[in-house]
Length: 193
Image (cartoon, rainbow, N blue to C red; front, side):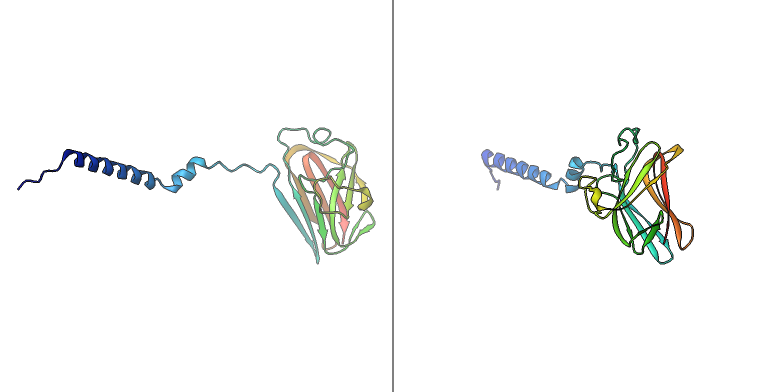
């Protein structure tokens, strides 16, 4: 016995089957492929956040800052005008914290946390420890909150230091040096604890 299927029923079955296959193909697209299409490469951080730590005996000194790059720019006397307060880093103000008193330029800096600012000049820099350590840049800087101010002579390097860098160098358990270096300028000062 022969089965006869109307042509219209056969066409409807073929169309429905084709539609279902098309739906399945759409569902099979892996999510990973979709993610790859819309993802963007990670951007390089121009001023990475970093810190440095110095330990001298039982004294701990930490400097927390964002480290901007030179990126083919003239920094001192260019990007940063001379004779103006600078937060000594990028973004938030740089801060220094010490668990013990420090003696800098024969003046006692009590244990605590301080905003670290500088006033760069061509021949002489002013170093500033300010009681307001938690501020954006120098926006809220107020000279009335300065705890310690003193002047130092900058040194000029022959090589470019691409990213701002702080160092705490231990001479012994009671003495050391704090320095900042960026572009071709190095500024440092001694301390005792």
